[in-house]
Length: 117
Length: 114
Image 1: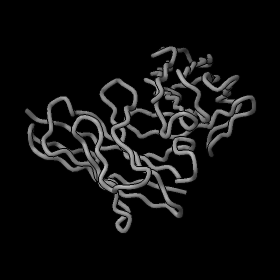
Image 2 (image 1 turned 90 degrees about the horizontal axis):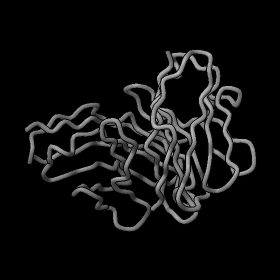
Image 3 (image 1 turned 180 degrees about the vertical axis):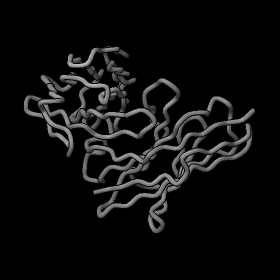
């Protein structure tokens, strides 16, 4: 079984400042890692994913995340946030069996990012 | 990538009634899932929708309350039966595997039970 901990439930940050949203996971098997974003009253949109290879993953909207196996972390970063980044961000894991996308996701509780003008 | 649509997008229902939510994927995926997102909460997996056979339910969810069908690779339905106000949530379907190496989500169905 897997579990995901998002350490911050809410993160306020000023516009154009950098931000880091933290995610730690626990698993007895290798995992795939994902970050999703949910804008108000909308569904989930994939920001980025780590399946294998380079531990630094770049996603949409200028976000990136780094997989750290020894620390079991997958923190999300953006060097300069915009008002439009205000949303809730979910970290998720699935077991790294063959066929990524074929297994259910375990989600963290989410982090609400509020960008202050 | 896969594009997933859901119908209805939202509904307000009376206690004791049932609602069926439809989920359509634009490409063939091997797996489809149904999640529930209660107000202010994260997503919880309800079940895995299996093509042509009974869904696989997670602990705390039962077929009598949440019957699921998946007649083919690109379509699934979730029924919320005998609804109570505690069923007020957003219900999301997702698809993955096959032609896509991740899970993509539909826009969700926002259900309010009075």
